Length: 410
Image (tube, rainbow, N blue to C red; front, side, top):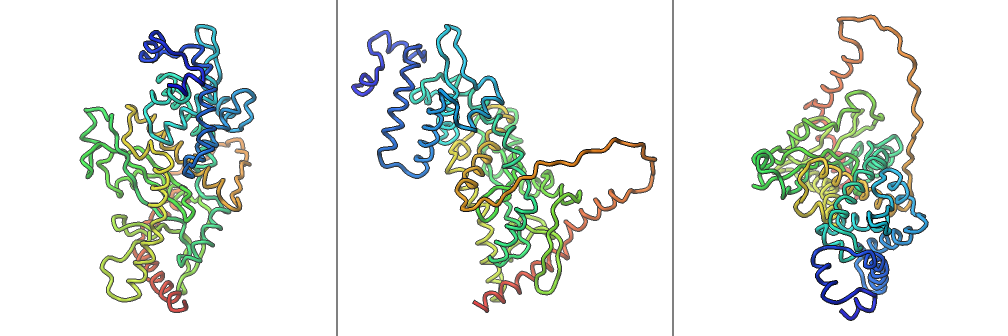
């Protein structure tokens, strides 16, 4: 209590009763900023883990922006949602600042703490913290999903192909897998639908990650009773490829030419030409080597899940919200922030986003035809090529020989 009194927190019976009731007085709200600064500065002068140090730096930036809004993300998010802006309470006193609201939201995401626990740190009420979190994650998704949840463009694919070829997998674009997020407050009527092998209600995240742990694809929200194949059938992972809008991928392995990239997957995924799976119980030495290398590189997505849960503990623990829309925004916002951190820590940023779109010409009448159009035929052929089992077997055999040759050269 001595430290709290030094900072300026009131004392006495009346103050204790108000504090236990969850009421934040105007004077205490103002002194909360001073206490918050004291805690942040004290934390930076001590020994902190890298993850905690990053959070402290972000919190300091938010605090500094209370007066002049000099942090870009803060001002962008504030413009996106009016509720995040600084406002005056009904008592005409100064309300919670944007920085404090976002600090509360970030702490809930990063540490998975309850909303009422942020009052001890940023001096805002539980309802304000919950509302700030919902507005924050929705604004992050609305503003940054186009850049940080996009499919790989031509430059991205060129970089992925170059790196993965050095790892022994020409044509590889990433690895795919699913993760379950426990839903603690799942409505009772839905528990049977959302309960799967874990015997608890869960929500499924399907993701594709590359060697640098960047998550390129995120499909979230299906009930936990589904398996990976069911999730794949509902996913839009190959939509652009089937519609002919995906960037071209051309490569050769063991004398055979291929025109579609592939993802490393585990044994449950189907034998499609866009998946490369391991070999169960291999006997030959070269097949054992292939299985070992494939399983090692496939861990990219597993590592991405682990890093995501370590950075944002809210997706590691049970979800406390009741509605799926909020959980969907939270998961996507955490993935966006995860990709932001990866981009910031990357030595050289080679990702270039092209925002110039072609202008759509005025529509002209098109005669109706009952015959299948070329577009529909191409769409059907693309689906057939994606699900081709023969190409899957041939690609796996070529990779076995390719990796064995590299192993012999080393």
